[in-house]
Length: 491
Picture 1 (spheres, helix red, strand yellow):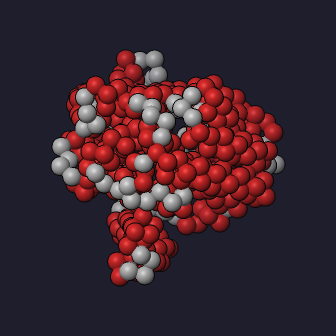
Picture 2: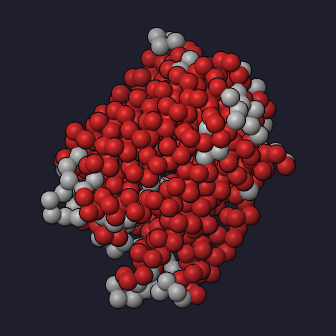
Picture 3: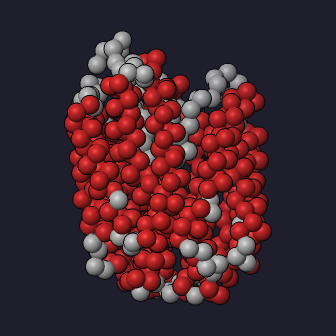
């Protein structure tokens, strides 16, 4: 498509393309949040320990993180609409498999397959907008995509809680099927095909394979090691595979003509520092938020719907204040907000430990949620904008994709590690007293980690002297923008 051509934001054709991409990425965003509300119900249904519940979450995150960069590359080379469509079909088929799962093991495998589908469709959704809209309308189209995607994420816990109460946890997955059909029809009728003419090198399948091996072996070690023993043969083999896979991955990226992860981007100090802060903070958040719905349902006796509503104030705070926070960071530089924001998040997580002391939401949960949300609003926009703005313009898409993957890898590791550190093992997560004690430990550990992230940011992040921060931010959404996209249009 020529640079002076493209859809306009207000046109009917443009609205159809936005609808298709929002719904497509929305089912992946919704699924990532809705499953957390169903975890206690799933655990009781299959009568499994906490490690199996962890795998229900981490299997999806693992394959999503491992294949996200590859999914964007495939779309650039073979056609973004084509790969997006394949991803939607793949995701829907895996969702159906999750819904009929006869055992926890089957569900975990289906969730891993579902994550691959998400890794194919989510990069394509944003890349389609970038390629389809005229340059003057891209920012508005991407803004609409981000805003409606955020609503899908916020709606996930509410929809999940209602479906569990009215029908079964299986409908959390069946819900994706009719939405996927609508997406496929809209895509076939209204979404134009596009490719990146510069994407002619080989797809980095070797790098993707070693990435999957490393993350899988590492996750297995962290989740199964405490139960099987750190010196058991299975654990030792997993440790060896994780180390060998990491070395092979780095080697593959260094030698590949078209690497999935260009390691040269990490030579920029500000970029590396921003991603280190991202890893620490998003790890703390993922670990704590994995346990919160379980704690609310098991200890405080909230219904699935009530536990889904618990974090709704965070969404309102983010929608209200995040853009203002980003503009403030543009004026004064990101260092102050990136140093102070994680400390406010840490205070919120510390307050969240009181959730185990009583079931009154206004007394024990709401103050923590408000504090937590304010901290996120202070932190997220400047953090993501710094990661994007630190990379050269030609690497803006890769910078966004790397920052996304760092956030998801951090969550993957935290969900595996934090319950173990807090003493939540076996079936203890289904017993109120044991879970309450473990939850307090976990939230204080997450608070300490967030506080460390604030200190790290204050010590390593520099305010730019010339180049302003990117105005937009993605809040760790799944989709990286195009690799050749200008920095001012990154999300």
